[in-house]
Length: 530
Image (cartoon, rainbow, N blue to C red; front, side, top):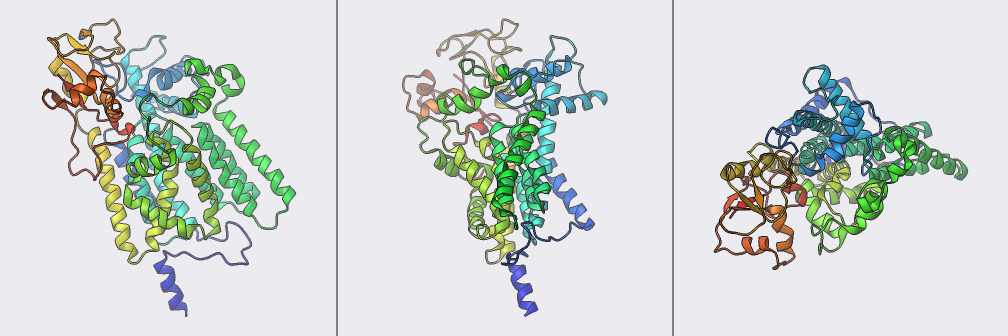
């Protein structure tokens, strides 16, 4: 009988059901042995390696004083950190909360002590300071992304996982969308780390005090990106699953958790309280909390997501496969079926459902919005694979696809950017464009945005004596929408008009890669010269 039970546990990855006489939500769990430390370090090293490759991609240089990633702009990252360096602790930017800005400042200070950065004390700062601050933000993102993988493994161990715990950690280390955005000085990957930490603290909590720590971390998650504060639902669900509690204590505990999360948010974004008007912002200027959460989701982002149908279907069938690949999604769906039967999964499943449900209402549908769900989906994919016949084979398949997808997103980071490939062919010439130079155009002028500094002369756009330069950012969505009134669409859709094309072709890319989410264009936008 014992051997039969052992075989069953081995087949299911060491999972055990919760009996009717469970006395605690968390139950007794196997300790994390010291012998696990090498495995944790290996997972961290693997995750950090893939997030370090190409980390200097698109950073400012003498020819271009801005990043090739639009969200690493002066207003969003550099401006806030420079304010801190000049003694003003108000970042004066609240489309996102302030925790990532303060963390970037700390990393910058650490690099400054090591002599690896440029002092930004001057009011007007040159491009080396912009580069150093953005790189500090990227280091913070890469570190948060790398720490998420071993944290996923620890969560799996808390779920009494067997070998599938290792698989879950590997999938989190190699998840393609997460790997890509770990290279950027943006908020999505750090927010995902705090979400994962909140889920771990929820799972290990034995009582209300333990769950209170999870609620505090949920506040820090909201202080990184507003909407991921929804992870507070996990400790709240866990609170109501605790045994021996009465209705009054659970209601009071829920209010205490909400208050704790709010206080943690204020610690991470103190000027929400100290400068409420500036924090709330002005929707007409596309600034502040009000615009980001109340206006932007309703207005959308120009043509990018027009006519993309139902938000939930779009995220599930278009964005999510690029975040994880299809095999992982299918395995995660299988995992959801089995996990729904286990109480210890319910807090995580509650956040998964609530967060995904909230995304579907927005008209802004970037792939990166799904990143906070990556740790849970990797856990579910590994759990689902463990429930299939021959789980080791299925686990190897999932790991291979994750590695394949990570290779696809890393390839552009390690090549010369298409914009830089096109630049030498335009040197010394007058250039025609359809609009002003921006992050998606070759580096015509150091300051960008058609600034009156030395650089290539730019004129209005028509094919003629001057070479006309257009970017995939300018034609892709209009072409998808059938905009025949635009010059860019007519050019790219006419095979008789030849052009010099610049784009990095990923070898042996996963199927379905030609039309990628908008996020993928940041590192590899096709540039054409007519």
